[in-house]
Length: 441
Image (cartoon, rainbow, N blue to C red):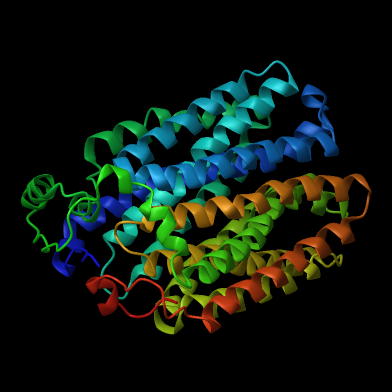
């Protein structure tokens, strides 16, 4: 198979620029994703746009349904037209969608805005993860992905502070339009295209020009651009030979993982409020769980590079299930904050390590497609999680909500464990650079 960039091309100024700009746009992605859950308790308390727990769950599912469409589509498109264009368009879409939500005069218009946001949110992450993976130093892919995903949790922290600071859901959504004026122009001007992508498409002259601009060495390629009739080969490669087993297991693990991520992200403040905590503490839990997520991304990424993604992700999901179930028990506030922090430490990085492992096991020609479809199929869980949380909260049972999310954690743990037990021998061989990397799967 094809070879990726040599280590010198991945290091230094160019790699730092790529990771830094991708970190910024993923920060905005996290802000937009978490803002709805952060302002939701206030929206329900004031009956804004006639919202109630049942309708709130539906609205959350509209956003994740948009992500279900955006993630696999963007992965395939990114392998066609490039990572940079996909990142820019996705950021612009979810920023403009926030303006629709902020100005909505009805719940239907607000729901449409969240659906549009989902298209952009779903489209950004697979392309950003693929981009930083292709510039990651040898043996540090999972750590770089984990570092990137700290931006997502940082966005969640910002969302919590925005909700507390503004006290108004419309103002909060207007703030989420800011990426259109910061992230999009910066990425358009300074973000370089992936040289691995350019080489995979046979655009050697463009790749060489980019390498010369940043003073890096361009690796030799042994594979030319696929013919137009083979454009869907990146998708079909996920099912060739025995590869379909591993592909489906990753999709199922992602289903459970994203059910947890989006269900807990949206409903944690409301569940904790219903469990007897005041509104300020409930929103504070959003900040704390994302602080834990940042720590977990860094620890999980380093351990994944050393011990393998399937193993670490499975342990993390098991710990997540335990932590979420523990939150159904009313505890002293300091202890509750501790449990929330630890739960966040495992929750978000467990899913991120799935992406890191899929990216590592993929080739230059289909990496974005593999990550995008893993994320996209997981969006079925992301659609189901917010809906399920709303239905369970509407019954008045907070214990049932925490238990359901804990079961999802156990399910994801089992599925990702199986990807580690079965490394399909008939799968396509890795690229030469991947064979040099420390295993992440």
